Image (cartoon, rainbow, N blue to C red):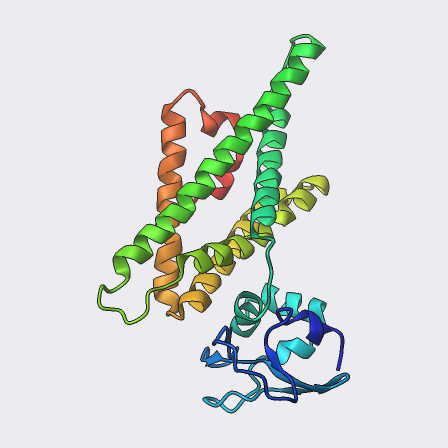
Length: 267
């Protein structure tokens, strides 16, 4: 088996030895039917693995443990539910905070770049340099507030829609991690700026659509719900985010004139 299988499981978990150790709690999910599973595979001896078969759907619990990470990434880009379940439930990825920070920096840089591109300054060089630096900080704060409003809108909608008599409450911490991970498409903002051309505004819109589509799939997989509810949750987040933009427009920070990306991406 390829090395991708070893990197696809949590260290120290997911496999029972040949001695028949005590069964771990159900920490994993079948990527096909979303049923809980106690293990992903059994390690019988040196390099000899046997993938666990799901008792519900009679398919491998997680076929991606044999796949190369590049193949898994391609399947995630294609928004396949199986790839999302593998990443969210059957791997131990702890880059949510770093990825969120980096995405905010990318978005702040894009807005700052558009702001500088549209402004004409006749002040001395020192004043221009300091003004540009503070403009970047301002764009980062704006992007952070909008991201927080987007997530708050999603969580509020799901909290209202969640039945009070539900047998199992959703893990909002896991959902938060899923939403942060599914926003990786924002990293494409930097290449879109570096390789600027006539179709850059179209590329920015496509990136926005891709990120929202990934968010919808992350909600659907994490909560095991339908696409309609996931789409409504994302639209609720966009509504609250647009409200935040309107509030900024009513304040001293005139985001509509300072940063043209609001006109092209918020819809």
